[in-house]
Image 1: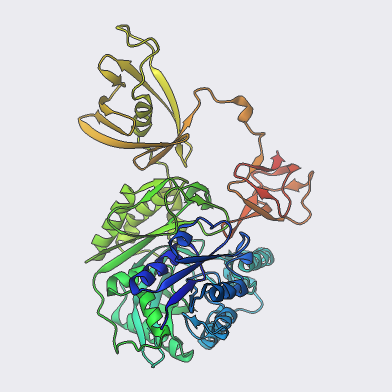
Image 2: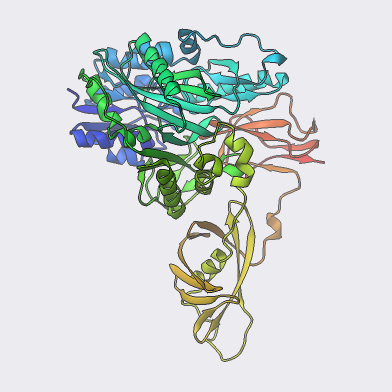
Length: 613
């Protein structure tokens, strides 16, 4: 019987596993990098062990350190979570060899399925060999791990070698394994998966389907269960293939078999031999705790002959610290506040935590359940719209608009959804009254120098910029004998935290929170600007600035000052939050300055290079 469990992971999934352990009376052990020393998952564990360093390769990917941590802390079992070493057969074997219980499938099953190349061979599918023009487009894919890392779509043959190199580097950084392969790229299919749970007594449960078609960079953004619109025949076929994959590997524990569905035909993608990020939607419709069931299976318990009956519909949205309109660029900074009312919220962060550069930028998963799909989608969109998210720029507005888009509400989505709709979904829709509400809250309690006078005076002026689109606003208001006033609206109430405005007979209430120069007005984020911009802050035309904090990992071969470059030409690559980000020439011209070199750490806004026309 398991009495103490170490989670070989961090953030949201570690907290989620600890929650089940507390319910079961199992003590918990956390591991943490230096960057995570004060993270919530560390504080919530009964014991914690430091993994020296910050980078995943030095910490969460060091299986030897994690096994030692489990033994030192007196744990008798290890749960890998997802990502990192969760699909590493050598790590699973090392855990078992140390006399610890491994919460997952046998190493042989991981070996058979965790490598995408070997999994396809097991299912009778061969990866592409030599790629020709006739094979395009193709997908370069990491053999180990998942989460969209180490994946590249190649549409031109001349780009293949460069994308293979980039995918290998990203896979090594994320999973400690640089093996990649190439397969045909199926565009605009639906990404559908089957959750399975198997025990050591021959029982395999197919726990319904999930649709995960809304993806950015091949990483899922919105997931739901059950997958809508599948025929009973197709569902039965998906179940049969998933069970066959489990039985072929003598599988035990939780796993997921993934498919692309095109025109009613299912194409096998891979089997993930671990718990999935999106497992909560399955838990919600079946009324089960998958982590508790994983632990039960690992202890040798038998599953009932059949799973419980599903009920209703569940939808999950991943809330990321990123700017979708800027190439999904990850964001860093302090998370001052995060709450999403009325839904399940699984988060790796607490108020006041710092979002750093070392790990995935997912802040939380918001999950809504309702008796019908329509009700669940509406519930989640409304909860996200009302959410309090004070800190770095997030994808919250994108999630709300995606959930309300006709293609999604009518279940007509596919994996090309964001390729088609991203510009419209990220178009600025500023609230015209939010800047005025911010200015009135700021002015609360102030009076014009010398006190109010019965003389008409010039208005006070405040300037704000809407984040992340950068729209600038100038607002004007006055102090009067009756309080604050502004043209075109009635100021019903104004204090430092709450402003009520009435315009055209409609009354609107704004909650206002200030953190430094950032002002949060309802769901609008503003930056307070100086009245007169500093001319010295302007950059030289053609300057390439770091869009995020990170590390320069590569500079294009032969690139040096004085080189001729073409618009869109890749110049260098930054690594931030386990992903590589390509920095390209903004125009055709000459590289007149190059300040980037491999290994250099840069802050957001740092000057990397200058291209002159």
